[in-house]
Image (spheres, rainbow, N blue to C red):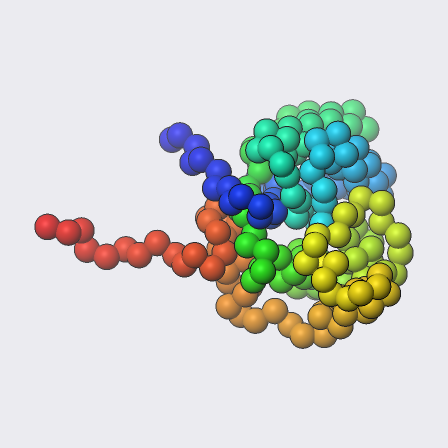
Length: 212
């Protein structure tokens, strides 16, 4: 079956998910997480694809990134995936595929969904029951966006910048936004959009009777 074309929206960042082969683990030790983040930082700089949010889960990753050229973000994810797979196979004396295949992605309309998408990404470990709060998970962008520690990988999106007139105010308002849970509708929209490769808020395809 031919692959579906990726949907892109001018000016909208991409929410990207890459999963381990057969949903198996792709991170095994602390050094694995650190190596992946270093690769992501290097390739995002080379390809001019600023990263706004991320989380590295045991068997998959989420990345929210902007881009100027479609080929740039594809090259970034391909380069990170290939070099990381080689590193893991070498260090853990394994062989075979590490990733399930090409990454999934969907555009994120900024005004309605960008900050919600950042929260969705950074709350993954909380929803998985791994930590009580996002600040307790080391391998995400939350502590950087919330101002708890410096994260050289992150480039704030203009909507994040609009959260306040100073860095301290922006960070405080960002932290406060996590006191309110994402609605069931927001969760459904963000999950369905990344799984189906569609734009959040555009609705699901209708399955009516064929016209005669």
